[in-house]
Length: 330
Image (cartoon, rainbow, N blue to C red; front, side, top):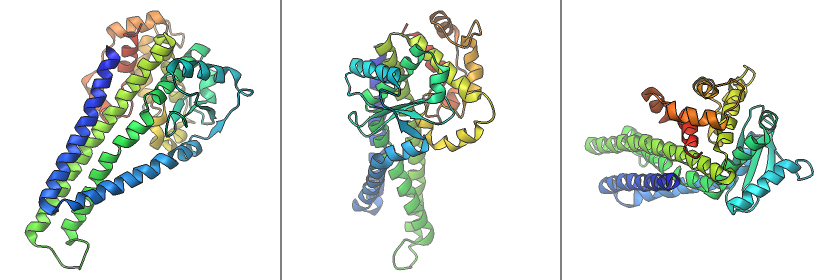
């Protein structure tokens, strides 16, 4: 029932995004003619298409991925194989990411070309069941085609930005052709459309971020379904946040990885704040969250309005909300 509600919310996000862009294009067509917005839409689709196909190479280079054989990492391959079979998807290619932050991520253009990677630091910090729970989360991303969904949805804010940029400068400088100034009323119309497009760009970005957070909840539910151990994922998230927050050497790495935040199971940029919130779940202070602790935390944990507001601008759900929801799968 909970996963069904997540599907419904994701569907509503998609419908709302397309309704928003449709309304914006109708406004533009009313003022300028129907042909103009199509150019921006085609340009955005081309750019996202290029990003979609070269994206895996960018991820590999940025995240310092090295693919490993079954001989090198037999246990890691075994876990991925078993989880992929349970999820009903082809076994993805398995890699190790050589960045000094505990993390796991999945990427690729389809289920057949998907790759799943873990960092060496994650393998050092987590127990086997915790690693399996994290892998279950990442394989759920693959099963749900999250890479394609989020990439596709990101087209809409991009279209809005192109429209804003074009109409703003056309309104200011009188258009691209001929060097002649437009009539004052037409320039005002151009600037009005630019203003509307910017507002829609901002709103559509918030919707895409919301969709991204839903995908994280959905992948958490998928991990709980595959492993039947939601407390192991909660414990893994706690350890990953601790590993990302600890020390000052990683600050440079976290800044470099800022553009790749969506590829982290736990957001490294907010790790220190997140760690303060999650320590309350570790009742015996042993560095992990067991089944009893997860159940107790899920019952008493609360997220403040300020934290909910900050979450609006994040690719990841608030970790307290996330762990609290994992408690519901026990």
